[in-house]
Image 1 (tube, rainbow, N blue to C red):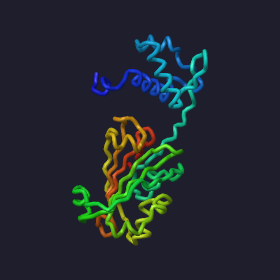
Image 2: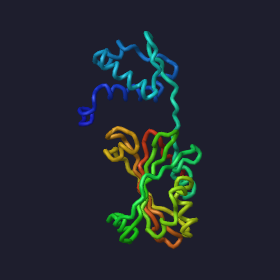
Image 3: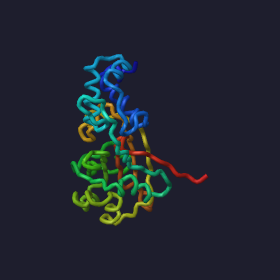
Image 4: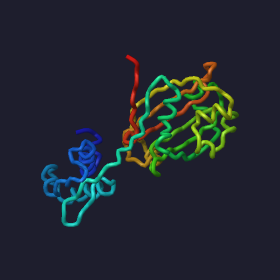
Length: 242
């Protein structure tokens, strides 16, 4: 038994297991969930525990409770924002920002701060403006971006513009700097208490962490963005020539 299994309540573990079965279509949409008695027997728990499980499943939209009858598996809206990993800079921007999904952007905070050392090592400036943004799909937060760039450049970009256009487009347009390529690192991590409140997920929830450095046509690093994507809302796909 892992540490997370020991610290996560059993009813949540069971609920997540059933969600996984629904996602894998072991329980098809429209079919009936096994009875509370059968589930209690399978997982060797009490009916009270199963009641907690079905409450979670109903609240999260995985089942439709029916009084005096077995719950029905709900149709799932499997809408993932798919990010293509290609050599094409524009393709990545368009997919990562979720243009075709009508994702809404909200600026959470903007501050001029002393440049954090890892960012200073890249940009070589003493002060940066830090912009925090959250992206939402159907009013649900799906990703969180923290961008660092020189103060004199970011002051040319307003919050209203950031909520309507991509940072890459704005940076090139308003700062008159052509961005040629980026260096990117992708890592898996778990949500800490800070990310929990922003992305509306549980502590320990799996995320994609993406570290981007944007370079100008003269190979000078221009900006750094740290991106946190909910793993239940995004897919990374790759296309390569053979």
